Length: 302
Image 1 (cartoon, rainbow, N blue to C red):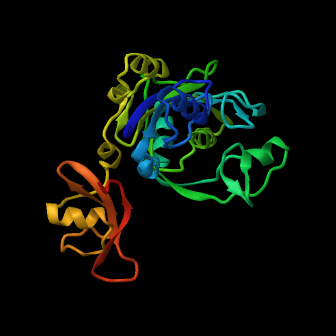
Image 2 (cartoon, helix red, strand yellow):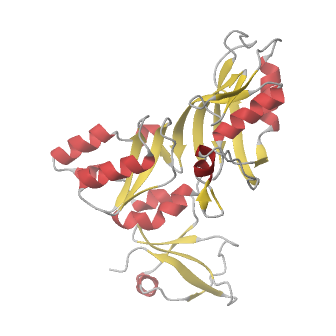
Image 3 (tube, helix red, strand yellow):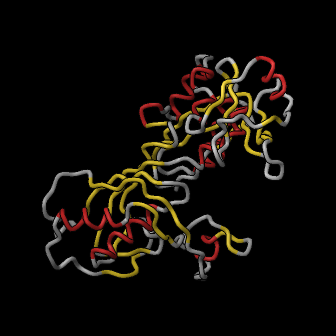
């Protein structure tokens, strides 16, 4: 089996739990996920099977889209609804839709984020959540993340003070913490806040409507049609530029040969080398030899 299984991850399971279960259902060890979803978050989780595991990093690095909810009036240790309350402040004024939209607009584009303590980022060889569980807070390196779009989902004019929550959709780049974004939205409105709900609706080119549940996977396996779950490897690389190559060149590419750089080679980009509708390899410019391209990954050499 080689391909990408677009899984709808349920709440209550870690991404690794899903991988472990799929290894047992599909009876293969070559299974890998493409970007961790927190246990309480449901949504699109592309799973790479067989040779597709070689391109997992490309799906992980692609954009994601989420539907989330911000609740004003309380921050938590984890920045979401499952942490302990830290700061609480009642919403005591009228907040208009226009004011919230102005804040969302101010957070669109490149923004600086500091990862939350409850996250899997490593500092000094140890994951941040390990420090957090010991009650230790350490300095975290801030980083730039991309917010492609950020908009409200529901139709309202004034926020309800008794239930100060609102839903939003965000399309963002790699490394964005939506929890942290929710806290920042609240801060710019003048209140403590946390992310009270989150669902991932898209990862790379994979959408909610493409997905299978774990129960679907079980049914496909029982009907001896597990291959019907898989989408082609090419879908995981659809965001990269593509170069269609001849039979002669394909043989060289399969063997990992270095090649002369074509005139129309995209600047500073990795390129999919495709032969007869199938991705053979991924190439990029040679870092030390001008005018030469080299393979990053060879996916098929048969």
